[in-house]
Amino acid sequence: MKLLVFAHTPPPHHGQSYMVQLLLEGLGGDVRHRQKAVPILSTLKSPHGTADFSPSLESQLSTSPPPIECYHVNSRYSDDLEDVGSFRWEKIWLVFRYCAEAIWCRLRYGVRVLYYVPAPGKRGALYRDWLVMLLCRPFFRHVIHHWHAVGLGDWLQRDGTAFERWLTHRLLGHPALGLALAIPSMRDALWFRSDRVEIVPNGIPDPCPDFETAVAPRRRARRAARQRLLAGEAVESDAQTGPAPEIFQVLYLAHGLREKGLFDTLEGVAGANALLAAQASPLRCRLAVAGQFLRPEEEAEFHARIAQPDLASVVEYLGFVASAEKNRRLRASDVLCFPTYYHAESFGLVVVEAMAAGLAVVTTRWRALPELLPADHPGFVPPQQPAAVAAALLAAATQDGTVLRACFEARFTEAGHLRALAAALQQAETGSG
Image (cartoon, rainbow, N blue to C red):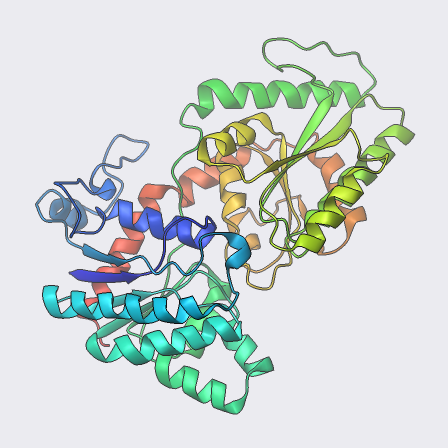
């Protein structure tokens, strides 16, 4: 199978670009630039030491070339997050350039399947998708939509004009396959009348391969120390707990957006510390904020808020953190706070990263998030309710977050994700289109 991947990889770095990068790496990269590369999918192993994919796919991967050959058009329109979604005339030129590359791959290499990531509900991005489909779709026999952002169909129904709905359906409708990350993102795949819809949850490389020997013992020791502190006992730091067991380290890891829950997290931490002070508890919350701001006014508001007395010595702003520093912060933290209500939230990859690191998780029942966590997960809070965030953080101080690690291993590994994705992609070419 030959697959034209019309999607960008980092930078800018966000969930969608990161998962496109994993897809390409997992399938061996752009075949035009590959120098005897071995697809990651052919080398990944399950926890039992065997290849974590079906026997039929395993036998295909043992041969050369791999069963899916990727031809990548890196359709990057922005170099940083601040430019994402903005209009520049240069972007129109880039659309034509990328489409020309895609059509060349179709004609030169016989690529018949187009993989595309539709935009969320924004007019500028939607019109770009129109142009791409108008130019490219006639050249490809099958089209695959991967719904990394959600809500386009609902946005068109709510805010789009009759013409926009008609033309969008005309240009993007009836793909051979609609790939959804979870049940909520099936709405878009169904709205566009995909010939077939498959749910393929995201998966990530394990940030803590030494979890059982190095990470879990420290988490359990710190949790036990916090329980003793809340019971009024004195606790000394030791090799197991690490320094400052009286500090409950909260991590916010997402773009610096109000809708992602940043300001609710700030108020939740402030509220939790106020409750602890009223109880004369030695336990205190500290917050590390990792993520890039997209709106200057929210960045100014954030810095003004953390300068106020109740948060002045409590919040550390890290900015954007790369993979190595992110993994270090995941290991060093005790709980992830992610009370999002972002309109285009499709999956919540950061929650999976926290589960892999054995963190307790405080989040909302928003979009796909309830599907990621166990049904009885105690850390769910209503959106836009900082008081509920404060109470959930205090409860999380004595919860065993390491139990979420098993959920990650069972459902969200990189190997499992690539196995399911490869199977779905291959079926798209043999199915109707």
